Length: 334
Ligand code: ADP
Image 1 (cartoon, rainbow, N blue to C red):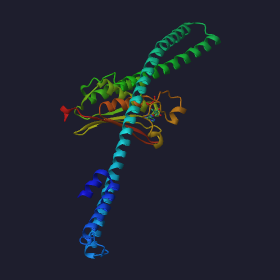
Image 2 (cartoon, rainbow, N blue to C red):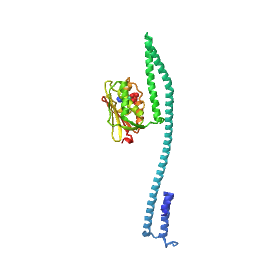
Image 3 (cartoon, helix red, strand yellow):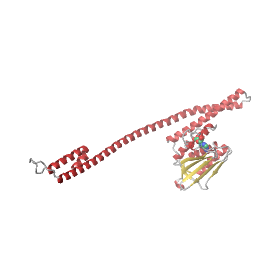
Image 4 (cartoon, rainbow, N blue to C red):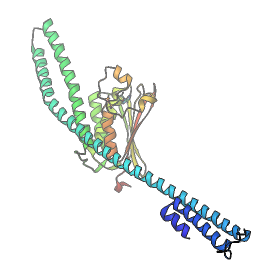
């Protein structure tokens, strides 16, 4: 018991010393009980030595076991300290990243606002010049060149305006500055209204398949309308002009789902993995004259996720793509 306490409190070394001292004491007491003070040499009595040996072995085993336990405890303590150090390092790094991200959002927001005003002025001036050139009754080669130049200025500033608007939209969505205005709304109505507008603007065939009963959501109708418009606009942009785009709304007892299907070129699996990343455009889109910023799907994903829904795309090369959006049904609709 004493050895156990020594090993427990002071460690293996003192435990071993205690074992040796105990054995020596036992041998001294039991081996020379009567010979003490006598000149007769000690006789080795195995009946005494064997129990002392057994005691020594048992004590050694106990000390070694305690030593191992102690070493494991110290290792665990060390590991815990290292983990705690890493946790605090990670928390600091996370805080720094968060601050850097906020700074980036602030920078993007200020830069976009500062750019928006001059670009709007440039575009306005270009459009004014185009109108004046258009009114000129006597066209000349110089005037035609000037018109071409202003058309280019108009096109490029329109692209820049779109980019700035989308950047501002994404930053405000991500910064949490813009809170979603969630109210009870009907997905059927949102889709019908968005598609009616797009039919008029594009003159294309857009088939809409709606369920007979309303599909009720607790959502920001304007933002969901933005997702529908973006997906259908993409379907129109990236598919042949003669092909139809199909939109279908459905639901089960848990979620509402709408899908937008086109008969375009499709997207390869490697590119499909990236299409929701900011500024990503497929090689086909970049090589084409179709303009785009690569931000539309990122914004859609953010909006859908802020509604606790999910968005994904299934695509087959040369057959077309289908984008799916799933949103939780309004609790009152279940
Ligand atoms: P963009 O402004 O370029 O259209 P998006 O974020 O809306 O940006 O889309 C990202 C990219 O995903 C597009 O540039 C295009 O390459 C690809 N993409 C999106 N929708 C479709 C689609 N219906 N068919 C084929 N490719 C698509």
